[in-house]
Length: 346
Image (cartoon, rainbow, N blue to C red):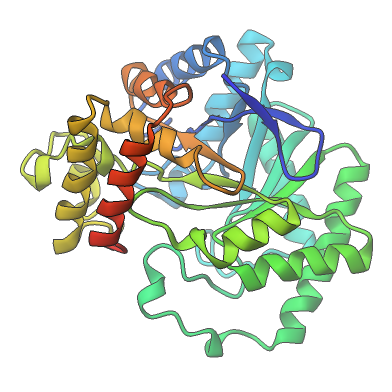
C-alpha cells in the first residue's frame, strides 16, 4: 500500500480510502467491523463516513447509524489512533431546510463526535454546497442563475471558515474538505481561507470513475495548481464497472440496483454499452475489471484517492488489488478509446 498526504497537510494516509455507507443497511455491525479489520490488515489507514449514512435506502430515521457502528468499533478495539477518520455534515434538504452555518457546523460535529466515540475527526467535510450542486446527475438541468447572490454565498463561506478555525484550534478537527463542489466553489473556499487566515479546504470529495469524468478538466487544473486532493466516490460506478450486472440482465437480490432501481440516475440506455466497453478492456488484458477501475484512478495527473466499499470482505479484496496493479500503456490506450466512444453515459 502506498501512502500520501491530504492537500497541503502533513496528514499521511493510504492511497486507498475505506468507504462505509452500507454499514447499517446492507451490512450489519459485525460485517462493518470485519471490513474495517480487513482494510487495516491490508495497510489502509483512511476511513470515510458521513452523518447521513447509511444509504441503500437513505432515510432520515437511520442517519447516523454508520457513525455509531464505527464508534462501537473504536470503543471495542481501542484502535482509534490507527485510523485517519473523515466524516461529513449534510447540507440543506436532508435533515430539513437547515443550511451549513457556523452554528450548525459546530452542533452537527458534536453529534458526530458522540456517535463516533472520539474527541476529534481528522477530516471534516461539507457534504454539498448550500447554494446547490450539479452533482448527483443534476448537471443535465443545472442553472446557477437560480443561486443566491454572490456576496451572500461568500459571506457564508467567511463565517463558516472562521468557525472552522475555532474548531481546529479546539482540537476537534485536524483538517477540512468539501464535497460535490464545483471549480468556482472550491476556488472561492480557497480564496476566503487566504483572506481570513484559514483553514483551507484540503480535499474535495466528488464522484469520479471511468464512467463519470466531470472532474478531469477545470477541477483537475485547480487541484494541480492549488494542491487539493480528490477523494473519489463511486469509483466503480455503484458496482457497474465490476461487470456483475451483465448489461442489466443480472440483478441479484440485495444489490444496489435491486434496491434503488436506477442507481441514482446512473442507469441509462448508454450506460450498459459504456460499462461493457471497460469490462471488455479488462477481459482483453486478463485483468479483473474492479481492480482495473481502481488502478486507473491512481494514474491520473492530479492527486486522487479512490474510496472503496462493498457489502463483503471479498468485494473489498478486489478493490484493494487495484492499489498495486500497474496498467500498461496498451491497457491505458484501450481505456482512452473506450472513453472517446462512450463519454458521459449518465
